[in-house]
Amino acid sequence: MTMAANNAVKADVLTIVSYNMHGFFQGCPAIDNIIANFSPDVIALQEHWLTPNNLNKFDDRFPDYFTFGSSAMSNTVETGILRGRPFGGTIIMINNRLKNILLI
Image 1 (tube, rainbow, N blue to C red):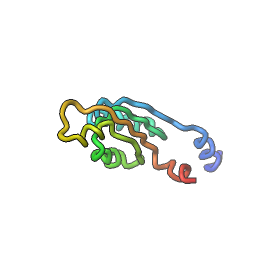
Image 2 (cartoon, one colour):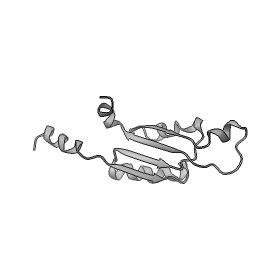
Image 3 (tube, rainbow, N blue to C red):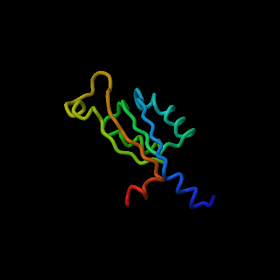
């Protein structure tokens, strides 16, 4: 099989993983393990518990992926000091190798 044919076969498969992090710092080791073992194309994450100002932690921690998402705590932090336990938030991580495909 030629290199071009091999790439064409890979293009037909899209690997997607969904994971509930139970907090950014608690979930990162599992995400590191998933990336090391499977290198998925898309990772959909829930419950990262980050405030809007801290969503860049995903870009810093996982440079091989570009991310977009939201914090469920936007309204909470806008009203003043954060009280209680953090909650919610979703983010999608897309492997950088797909950037050229997505920009077409």
